[in-house]
Image 1 (cartoon, rainbow over the protein chains, first blue to last red):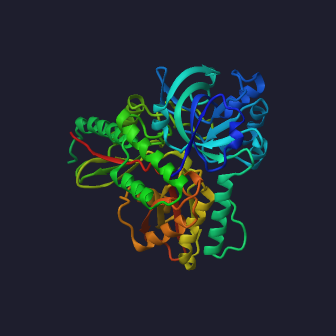
Image 2 (image 1 turned 30 degrees about the vertical axis):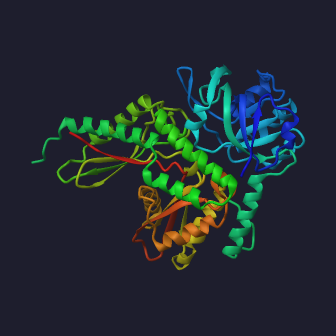
Image 3 (image 1 turned 90 degrees about the vertical axis):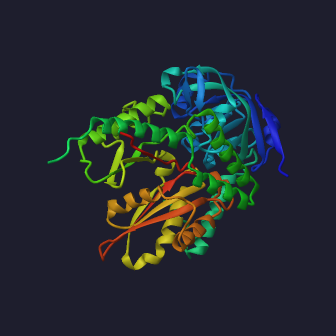
Length: 189
Length: 278
């Protein structure tokens, strides 16, 4: 039987106890941010209290003040843009696909990466209510939305000790591929 | 004497295109849901099990709320059948594009179609060459839609392989999935085009995604085994369920060529066919 840990924002050092592979649910306020929002926050400052905050990599579909669809976007695009948020006290990043080595290092001892199932936009929207918006001029996909979550089901992809589930799976897949097809070297694009 | 096309045909085509998009974006085909459910039953990895549970819950939620399954509602790829006697008139393409525009407002769909270089968004999911419309003969006038999201489409690959390397097709496909990792939102469906020409193989690979997932040939099973043995799992978090199905389409090719294309499709293998009423 798998246990699920219920988390609620603002997060504190309880995130340090989480381990890669743990099932969690997240409730409370999260802030959506994609590429453009990260750039804007770097230039103009963070428009919400970052202490214990959670960033959700997401470009939602909003219609008449309601969240219609809000699945995760690929987090790796924000690899070079996340350090300043973690430095200011952000405790968790939510998205899909995991993040680079640099972010894994930056999260050590202070934050975790939580993976939400890609494509599950309808389920996500059913567990959300819209609280507010910042940087609305960036457009619907890129604006920062404050969203209240009600038990969004997530898995810890990268923990605060540097354990990275995505990296472990990827290294295992490389090894299995090379063995099956007798490939001597690491396969890269 | 060529029969005069009936204006009602074009209105019917517009309605059918919109209806097919509505069906495809909100309701995942039963064979895809069956494949996901069967994969959930076979899966032994706890994280993978819960990922598939979340996907199945999302499918049910989209149905009950009548909203798109995923916020990436894709670009419209459309296949038409026209029976003998129906002329291939430019108005057919206009009628389909109008159906896409109406569906974009009505469902609503995310406007995803942009100019390739200026990146200016048309706002209505149409543009030069978009929707992509493929026409073939058939017994009835039908519209089939295959909304294609970018995450999986971007992981697709083509190779002009050596004719003597035909036993290396499974390796090329597995390598494609390995390099994609969790990015295409696995568990994926793999459409594979073998033969034809450079462009033809890619078209075959995409058409293969229209086939039901319930049955597979031994060649398809062999590739599926190689792919699932990578243990990338749902969303790249590990587990056996990396792909739900492999579908191969073949065409004759030049004796000196072996084009092989892999079109990667996320778990949301959205497709629907509507017969045009007129």
